[in-house]
Image (cartoon, rainbow over all chains, first blue to last red; front, side, top):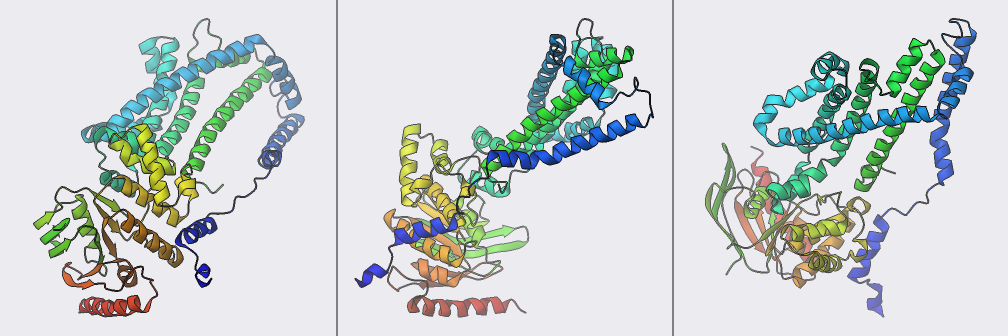
Length: 288
Length: 243
């Protein structure tokens, strides 16, 4: 029949929808993707080790001051098989996680307060940014006077190093909620708590996550400085072990601990990136 | 009887007069298009009706009716699924989970996105996102739907199809629609009436009833003829600002 030639409205709409959605692309397999992102990193590591070996071979420093990669990796290998080493890692990580958690709690509360109470922002908004730029090692003399050489001194510096970043992340997240979303909130009649619960807080999440990531970096740095400066009797953390190794002139161990700290830092950073990437993907802020 | 009455409504921003003595009556179930060039205060008018802004003079009466507003951007929340976005107004009104769910399913069906409830907004096309925004507006159970150039950012084909869909939903749901656009053909395609506004300040120049029968096509001779007539008036108004 003639009328069959005119498609009905439902089909036209569905057809256009289908055409406008991008065809589902087959994902390249996992192995290939891992390799693609891994080989430049592996190459970089190989280069660093090569240069290191060359410096050692040049005889610039004596072998007991600057040992070569082979010696260091051998020491590192036997180091990480001792239970004692893992006890140190556990102690350091406990401090890091506790300090960071406390910093997140305080930073979130302060950030939320500053972002929503204008006089408070006028009073301490710029102070928070100031604190963020302050090298955390500057806090140790005061922390030691306040808390003596103890866990609290370290905790204090870790928290004061990380909390401003967390607070700033939240503040800028709240400040830069897109205007169109705010208008939608208005149209939907959001007010007071509901507006925070359903609009402001979720909208500020990406910025908050960047704040957390930066806060972690600061707390990790502060902690390492703290462990070298504030030796708590009986607590044999990574920092203390490194200090001991230096005192005993065991260069190879010192370098091993540097590598350990670096690897832990990279792994935690990967976790944050993973959280960030999955958030962005869910929100459609990335292409992949 | 009318659902929406504006009687000599004015709006001033400091020294700028955005709307000047705008009078307008909208009957229940009517589809009214507001048309004008830049600076005619179309969006201002919608903000006033939506209660997002205060009028400076005159009387605006919506008789306590509920109003919803749609923008050119769908402005869906990316942290919610399509269904979550549609359920949001219900959640804010304290509707229970099960009822919310059922209502959202209905609304998804109405905008023909039943299979897309679990998608995220960014996974949809622009036209589909606008339909989700429409479903979200419908979830507010408003009596008056205000639309601020809702299809302005879409391509012609998509817009054409959304006109059909909007017309169908308007009829099925017996909505009252106040639709702002600067596209003359779109106004004639959709409206029962097309109201032409002047620019700086916004005043009602003329109120054109659209008599050609529905369903209309945007490229039909009747729509084209009336659009041409209105375009001439609009051009005359725009030209007035050259001096």
